[in-house]
Amino acid sequence: MKKIVIIDDEKRARDSIRSILQQHFNEIEICGEADSVSSGIEVIHEINPDLVLLDIQLKDGTGFSLLNQLTEIHFRTIFITGYENYAIKAIKIDALDYILKPIDPFELITAIKKFLEQEPVITRNIGVKTNLIKNLITGHERVSIKTSDSIFFVEIKSIIRCQSERNYTNIIFDTGKKMLTSKTLRDYELMLEGYGFLRVHQSHLINIRYITKFDKSDGGYFIMTDGFNVPVSQKNKAEILGFLDHIF
Image (cartoon, rainbow, N blue to C red; front, top):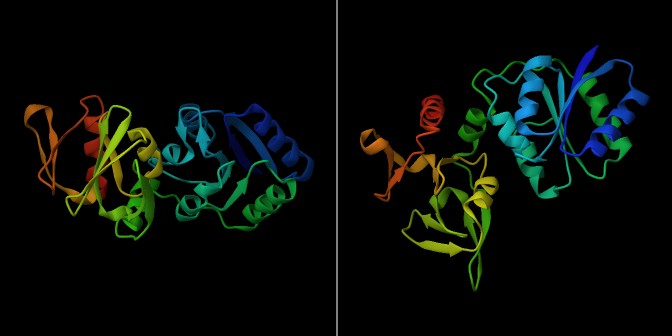
């Protein structure tokens, strides 16, 4: 019997998924549900599922951030979401399938059949974020950046860091150019998640490929290739440095 967990912040969606699966499959058991990143992590640790049906936009983060917080991945993942623009990230993270809301029962059934036909997943010990960032850090993916009078399409790898300016964000590039945009730093954190960027402070999001040094004085800060000193959140410093130890 295969164990399945459903993680979605909409109860109606969870109920719909449960109903479809119970009607069509006897060889699976829905062992748990969750509606957030934090509760999802708890239920995964408790149940040790074979498959996780995972919504991308959760109430306290994203499905990607949930996976990033796991040190071991020992299950298959099927993403279920209403946001089609996340498809590319789902593919890059090696998801079994990607289903858009409103859920088409036939698509869900087909995805579950695919899961049942596959071999058990091999545990990944260093975590999804480590693997994903190593794969993407030299990539050529682009992102759109809107300023007051233009929309620019830039290579993600050319961004050194993003700095919050109240409700705006300053984007700093490897050429020395800067762009002030009306999106918040949180918007860019979500947009660039999985592409080698790390939120190290409430006002700073950095591209880890441009770190030259970590200085332990004055509470600790990263020195970037553009010479800027980026402070590190004291609350999350140990976690940030621990993560970077796995990358480099």
